[in-house]
Image 1: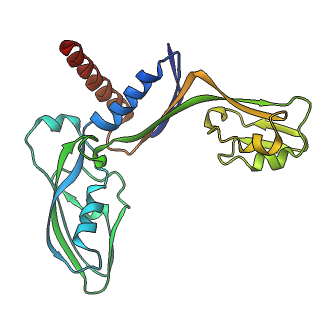
Image 2 (image 1 turned 180 degrees about the vertical axis):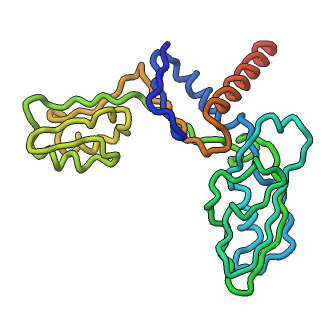
Image 3 (image 1 turned 45 degrees about the vertical axis):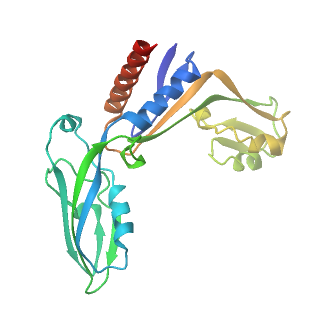
Length: 248
């Protein structure tokens, strides 16, 4: 089994070779369901004269990603946010005042509500630790995987190369005259939709996949770093397997 990094920023992708799909899917589910992050859970609204219902506002606040310090999950420290604003003003996530200056919204420019002249909003929110199995708002990332694409292009030229390239929804092809090719380092971005093959015919360009190679993609919401996400996921998966072994 081999693993290599394709892209290693907030949205990362990895090439996995020789891994069983069951193991890859177990890791995906562990990241989505078992990694703990902070999210707003309880909200006390003292005043809301905006056009947004309390329930909708509460839902928005719950979905604001918050920078998370894993060590705090073991403490009993209460983490709270206060908000008091008067219109006219666009209220953003950055207007939430945290009880701990390190636990701030990941995206400060997230719009919460627009307050018009004379409207006001005052509330207090409590953030707690949880995981995706409790609610999707706690999930640290969107995780997916697909087989590694194989793109075979006819040698000797392809008529209408530019048109074929323009049909690619992820823009990984380039064409000029009768020269059609895959942009450098973009093969793994193919989503296997076969739009190019359907138009040009399999004799000109054929899309298939390598069942022994998988592209594993992690789109991080920003509460935790990728390293911490994988560490927690592997630890939790290992604990679950140990428990299962004991029971059987």
